Length: 277
Image (cartoon, rainbow, N blue to C red; front, side, top):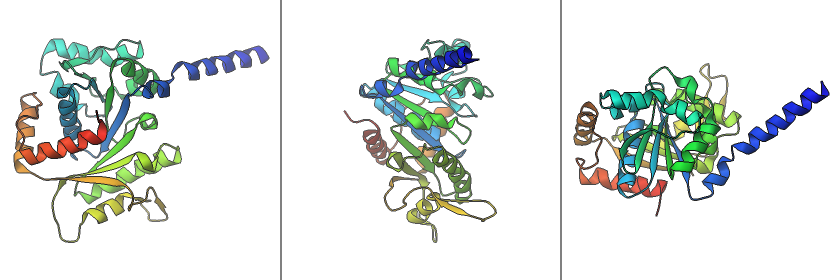
């Protein structure tokens, strides 16, 4: 029994030392997570930031850690050769092979078929392989994403719309993260997406609602972060932007060239926050 215990202890130490994510991050590389409710525009923002930064020469990887796997439908372009890459690229990461869908010279997408979320439970080996090849890892997250991904994020972007009913499930995940020591206030950033001016719903009230977790029965409330200190930005709702993105998704061709100047300015602002040269 003693020999078995010693062997298990040695194995655990070796495993902990093998995946040294922090040393890779110290070499100028970053992991950024984006999380929001369905239809909040999380993938929309992430995809456009990835396009902008990759066009500027940053070696970017998108890791699709959502249930819906929007990246699978967008980036495989209904081509069998690209679908084959999507079928195997997450398994490849687990085996030390970094082969995703190459969108351009500086942007690679790692996704899988919807329903294969269990492949993304081993966080450290996946991140280690990605960081060895790419400079910036953008992780598309939802409320079912393995929360250990947030442990290694330099920034955690929360994407929230005016749909106030989506705030409670978001705060439930944030509460779980805080209970596990994974919610660092200094990492939090909020994007108020598709923002419109409404009577009775201000940006401060939205952020205030996100700052506290209320148990559904209202038996207790827990503060998640300081609503007055968290950094945030607004992306106003724009019909032209929405229409262009719908066309891009339908044509499986994500490009920032077709957007109005004001939206490009906001993307530039967000991109500088994520990765500055």
